[in-house]
Length: 91
Image (tube, rainbow, N blue to C red; front, side):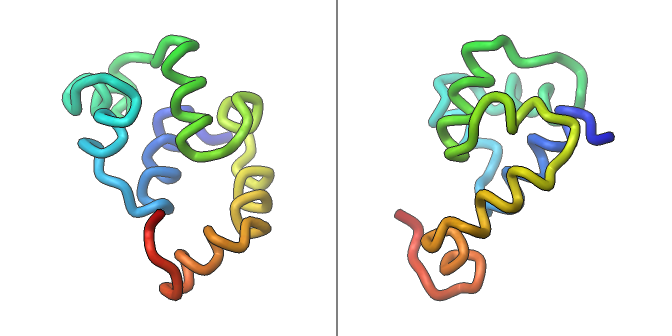
C-alpha cells in the first residue's frame, strides 16, 4: 500500500517535474513541498486538489491506496503517452 508521500514523489518523477515546478504551480515553496514527499508533513485538502488538477487525476485517485487507476488513466491519455515515449513536447 503506497504512502501518499511516495505517491507524490512517483507522480512527480513520472511526469518529469521538479519539486520547484510543482511548488510554483500550486502556490507554495519548494521546501514546504519537499516535506510532503519526505512524509514530514501532510498536504492540506486544498493543495491535494491542486495536485490532482496538475496531474489531471481525481482527488480520489490521488488518495487511493493503489497506483493502478492513475497509471491506466495516464497511459490512456494520448498526449501523456507521447510524452512518455519521447515523441511529444511538454505543453
